[in-house]
Amino acid sequence: MKLGRLNHVGVATPSIADSVRFYRDVMGAEVIREPFDLPAQGVKVCFVDTPNSQIELIEPLGEGSPIHGFLAKNPAGGQHHLCYEVPDIHEAKAWFEAKGAKVLGEPRIGAHGTLIFFVHPKDMGGVLTEIMETPREGH
Image: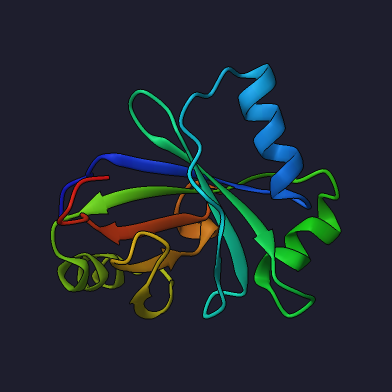
């Protein structure tokens, strides 16, 4: 397993609309994708393109969302996770597990339409880490 490209930084927010205004008006973002619901993950997602990566804005879809708990502790929102690409998600999962890292659940379809899983922050230097299979159709 080899560290792949940083695909995105996940940022939890109580309001994607407010965050979009911030990234557009304060940060000068020029390409902001349309928000969409990802009910299987319990979130609404919006991608902000940067020259070399993306910011993934994440808003909870109700109280059952994993982001709801994060925002309860961080009401203004903040960095939630980092996401790295790998060529083979199953090989990466096996590699992390062989290293003793706690993989959170089985691979599932993420916001980019490819398989993902998360690795517990205690095994990743304190950072919740998403591992995603490299998208086949670009980023």
